[in-house]
Length: 550
Image 1 (cartoon, one colour):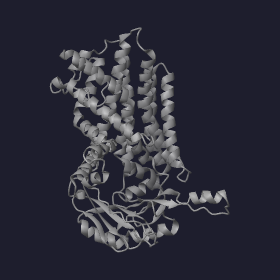
Image 2 (image 1 turned 120 degrees about the horizontal axis):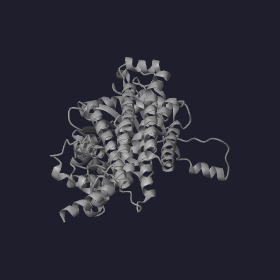
Image 3 (image 1 turned 30 degrees about the vertical axis):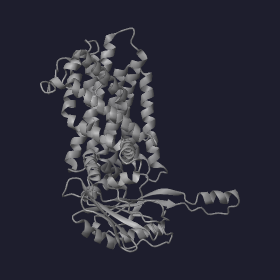
Image 4 (image 1 turned 90 degrees about the horizontal axis):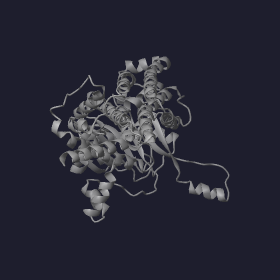
């Protein structure tokens, strides 16, 4: 009975992993790159802008005055300003600009214009450390594209929850894998049978999996919290607070400092003075972000926010009424609430932003290792099914899994490489530049899937496709130095090495793709005629975790 139960659990574990494998691969691959999102944004954008290191002369008031002179800021929308730092020299302003339409309109056209009175467009401006507007930042969104791909797959509205459900299955596969392999998780921790080709997949799969187990538990849990938070919120509101969301928010530490609009226009001034007051109130906190509510209205308020680097994952903020300078809200202890403070800790663990580049590099290696676990898991499943040589085998199903493995996994990496190439080659003033790069990414991914479905010789195709992908990744640093050598050197001279960091990351991925093509698929091809892996092999193996597909 015990062994039958383990076999059933192994089968369930395998099929759950197989079903979510492609989506999970995309999530982990995009998430691994997103650990260096700010570096990718700087890689794409900063060589085109001349930056200074004059952070001390930065003025909020001068910058806001310039913005209000050149743009009509939407009073009812958001206004967010990221202050430049020594690590991030060029920074950003995000706001909504009102659409002003002029012309002779009558009748129905007048009605249409009146209906469009509240219409607006999103603006993103790049600013220098001395507070000058450098240009439009909407064309440099490749880093944000990868990050959004990680958490919602660019699927409007439901994508966030879809990724949450996949994360839930990932968590189930993780726990079931630990149960299956618990007996020998220690004794076979470092087992690697180099002589048997079919054993290399399993042992490498398990070895990387067990070493990354704490990493995967953390990501499974934190991913569930972020992507399915609305589900928990609704449950708590209904069960614990009788449907009263106001009480729920109050208990969660959400402080409402909203002031009703007066519709009296008042210039936004005095932010520099309030900034100095905020620094005194918050103490040793590097304020990096301000947000203004009801921009240009008498009721406008400004919030200063920053991280306290002397404490782990501690964020502090203070809010002032701009016109009077009155303090509306102040927190000196991570929002003064265990729930909000706890969420901040989970966020720091998830983003790996609390220990510099060393931790992000470790998380990146573990994330790419997870992608390798998913790949080898699919290959083991295919190897087992093909080796059965049964007439009852679903040939289309096997071909579909092969296509999802080759086209989905390698296609994601290839589409990402093409995205980086486009981010460097496309003109910076091209209309809808960022949208076009995103469309090219998905076109490459879909084309990879279709081509994989059409090709029968998957092993040979996968080997060639991986090498083409490796060449595409290695081409990106070459393009950098062919197109922008002097500008990159200028960045190096002022101490900003984002371009180099991204190039090293891409060359590392290129090397991984080349080695996997040369070693892994050759081993799988030679092992095609060997005895398939049995249920007993999986039950006795040390661990199959994360998205293990046995």
